[in-house]
Length: 391
Image (cartoon, rainbow, N blue to C red; front, side, top):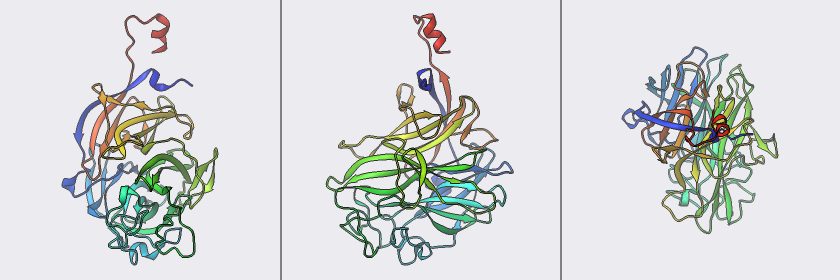
C-alpha cells in the first residue's frame, strides 16, 4: 500500500486560544476529551483533580466551546485509605492519587455520560503515593504505576460516580523492592519493568460497534532510572445504548482476545506518546497522531514534544511515522490531537482536508492550530509520470 505521505503533507496554519485554559482554572494535562451527543452538542472535559478544577465545556465545535460548570465527584481521591470508595486496583492494592479525564462517551439511548480517566500511584497520594522504589513525594524518573478508571454522570457531567477500574497491564503495579499491601504475591523483579496501562486516548466508532482505547505502557529501567521504551497498545469495548458500560478486551497476537484486566498485550506502535486516532472520510484512512519518544539519551525529558502521524486501514497495522513541520521546523507539543473543526459529526471524524490540531503541555493552555492535508509540490523538472503520481 502506498504511503499517504509520499504524496501529501500536513500544513500548519494560524493558531488561537481555546476555552481549555488556566484562566478558567483548568490545567489540561493530556489530550482533551471530546464527544458529540445525539442532539448535536459537542461536549468536552478539561483539568485534573489535584490542580485547579475539572470542568465541563459545551458548544457546536472546538472554536466556540464555553465552560459550563466545575464538576464534582461523589468519591474521594488522594489517600489510599479513603480514595475511590475503597475499590482496590485489580492487583489488590488500595487505590490512591488523582483523576485525569482522558476519554468521554455519551450514551445515545440514556444520555448518561461516561468518563474514562488516567490514574497514577505516585502523585498526590497524601502520604501514600508510591513508585517503583517505594513511598514517594514525587515519583523517581516518573516510575509510578498507571491504571484506567471509569466514572459516570446522570446530570450532564455536574456530578460523577466512580464505577470500577477497567484497564491494567499484564504485570502487577509494584516491584519486589516495595509491596504496597497487595498480600502474598510477587512484584516485578528489579530491572526493566512495566509501569502499567494508561496515558491513553479514546476513539469511538460513529457507525461501528466498538470504542477503542489507545494506551501507553512505559518500560522503565530501575538501574538507570530512565525509560527503556514507551509503546502504544489498543483495547476495545462494545458500544451499548442502555446506559451500561462493558469491559475492555486487549489486542494480543493479531486479535482482540485478552482481558483488559491483567491480560496480555501486543504493541501496535513503538516509542510513541499519547497516541490519538482520527478517521478521514475523504481518504478512507485512519490517522494516528502521537508525540515522538527517543530513549537512551541524556536529556531533560523523556518525550521529544514533536508530532508524528501514521496511517492505517485496519487500526492495528500502521505506516512509518510522518514528521510534521511548521515553516520547515519540527512542530509539536507534549499532547497533540487531530480533531474536526466542523459543527456536526464526531470530533474524531475528518470529513475533508481541513481540520484542527489541539496542542498543550502539562497543565498549560490548550492551543488550536488550523491544519490541512495538502498535495506535495511537484518540482518543475519532474517527468510526466512523476507529476501524474503526485496528483
